Image 1 (cartoon, rainbow, N blue to C red):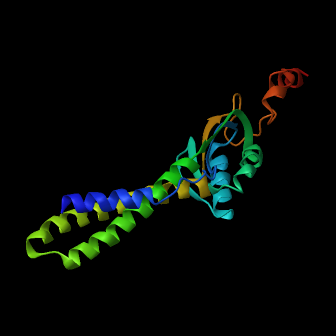
Image 2: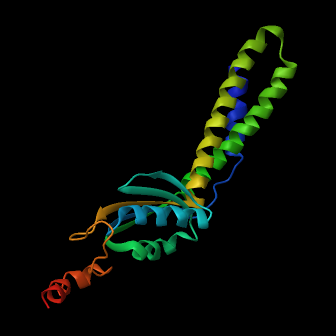
Image 3: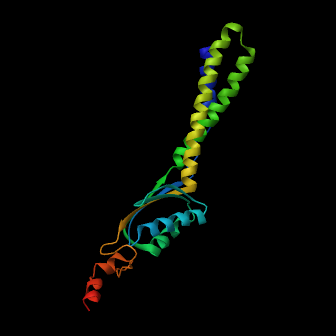
Length: 198
């Protein structure tokens, strides 16, 4: 019986040709921002997610993590600049096309194996049913694990993750409007100090 199952698995696996990867990507955005009012920045980021079919994964007074549709996440910079300026920015894109291709191929293989095992089970003798049932349970569990992994990767492709760390703007007071620019390179010129001295 074990030899029969092994032969079926080998034949099924060899029956699927290799395909080229689709080249799909997951996207993660990391921002360090400075804001005169942290509460206002947090509220703006949360509302942005709700307005664009995203959701807030986590938030506190100093950090917000959003999940956003990949095609809308580019506007996040505008939202940050509405309430402060960007001090640090990092974008990470990961190609998971090959991983998805491998998982989908394995899923087809396991599903075909499962169908074959059901046929064996129907024709099995009483003494063979326990062995086949054990193999069926193992294959079903493997299929569910593969499906879960595929769903996870597809979700990561559809929704980008945005992490924004919110720092208090230097020299700002709560409720006051700072004279610092939203652009860090302008701040580095020391224009703010010249204006205040005048």
